[in-house]
Length: 276
Image 1 (spheres, helix red, strand yellow):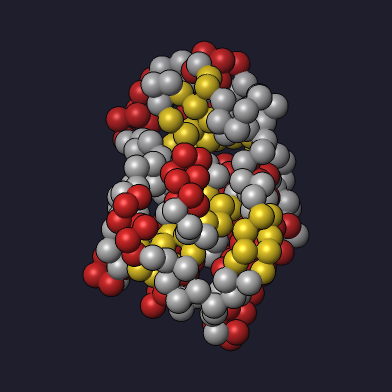
Image 2 (spheres, rainbow, N blue to C red; image 1 turned 90 degrees about the vertical axis):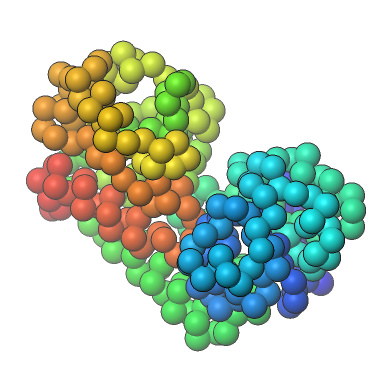
């Protein structure tokens, strides 16, 4: 056992080679599979559907916010993996009260994401496979760090609608935008996911608007409403820079880092005239 302090500020005795794992975090579940640790998974959330073979090999135990705790306890896992934002503190507490080892994570920076994968690999992944996954992440990060847009671009990344919500500075998504040269227009707002009004957003003059399909499923109708509403005179709308994007890219930690940096970088480069 290795004693570590997790993101819930609890000292957790992590098993070095857990035989049975329940994952309450879709991105973590995907990472475990890519690391070759799928045989350890005995439970996943309803949203853990990537890679798709999970649907047949690992039973669901409810959602991230409403897991069926009795089922998880009955599975007798050696380790439950949770996230400070995606899962409820009360659920984590009850699982711990029932004797389960729960590790709560909360990657914020891109380097945090790399370290999370490294820690998950330490649960028993083949060294060569783990090295391959980590090398791809590190190479993508190094590539992003060594290129610069011809000029920074002001960006709005939506999280929710009714009420509209976006990202603050202390979020993984913020650091992704920053890495490709995009300036989060609400970086200085208080809170991780501040609520905003669209007229307030218009005053920030966004040059790129990103509408992901999760956690809120923004659609083409939402994009059209943005183009014809309060932002109709914005640079983003006038230059055709309102984009529907895969929500896993800005919000899923782990091996999707390279894909996220690549796609966001492509959008940024096209909007700003390329990299210098």
